[in-house]
Amino acid sequence: MTTRTALLAAALIGGAVLAGCVSPWSRYESSAYSVFRTPDPSTYDAHARLLQRVIARAERRGQKPPPGVCSECAYYLWRLDRADEAMLLLEKEWQYYPEAREFIAAQKRFTAVGSEAVAPEIE
Amino acid sequence: MTRTGSLLWTALLICASHAITGCAKVDHDRFRRLARYYEKKPTTIIVLPVKNESLDAEASWLFLATISRPLIDRGYYVYPTEVTAEILAREGITDAVDAWRIPPDKLHQYLGADAALYVTLEEWEKTYAIAETEVRVTLSLQLVDCHGRGVLWAGRAQRLVKSDGSDWGIIGRLIDAATTAAFTDQLEIASEANSGALASLPIGDHHPKYSELQDEIDRWKEEHGSGE
Image 1 (tube, each protein chain N blue to C red):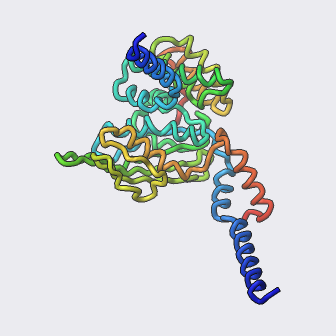
Image 2 (tube, chains in turn red, blue):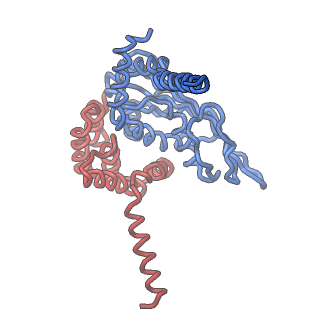
Image 3 (cartoon, rainbow over the protein chains, first blue to last red):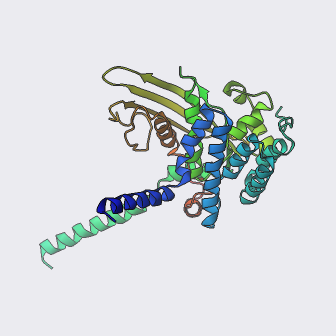
């Protein structure tokens, strides 16, 4: 192996390690902004994937995901017509953060029934 | 003991007593404010659509996208802004004007929110020139109790960022010593402004230092009563 190949291999491995170390949570804002600017299935999917990584990373470490992340991920999965997965995430959020149950209940109502469902009436 | 030695001891004693009283000095105003703030223990926050008074219609997205993370990092449960928008839209409420008209107690009654955050983007001006470009931003935030106690907290941030990366520094009440940001990175500017404006918000109960702070407040209450 030449020196150049060895250096290239080291750089690639180093880059991969660094990429693995960067918290997906630190990329939340740019991802959320992409969705606001371009609300379409590709940005929904990218954002949902990022949020799934945030959740998985926290759970691997035996921690709760940041508040609202399961709920937000559920919302984008629902947008992508993956309501079953969305409901599972809402159950998770419900368990992790009981203080938000009324809000999650409102989200569950439209997630479970589809786009025709109604949220609680705010008079 | 010589006269010089005696004087030296006296000086040392005076310094020591000053140091002790200095350390023990209690910021009663801070504790009074905190005790009042935590009376209702706001845990869940609903962020209403941003009232955008700037000329840039898209600027409100920048602030909405960058408001949740600093609030979560300060220990609050923040209702996801897109889910909030969806729920409100199903009620025919699609803009800040209508959303801000909802009485805060209704936000508690129907969605369980303890507090509502109202963000006003007063200014988001981009000035383009050959030599330099600048972004000027001013925003104000109000956290209103959804149990009828009015404004719990208010924050404001104002700053200018120049295209060459030099920061014009802190203006107004932006507390966070932000790093300089390239003018092109508007998201970073919005994020810094939000974080700066939120820096004085008392921490919420998911923050790692929350219990420590509550113990401090309890000790202060025991020692000084309500402080009134």
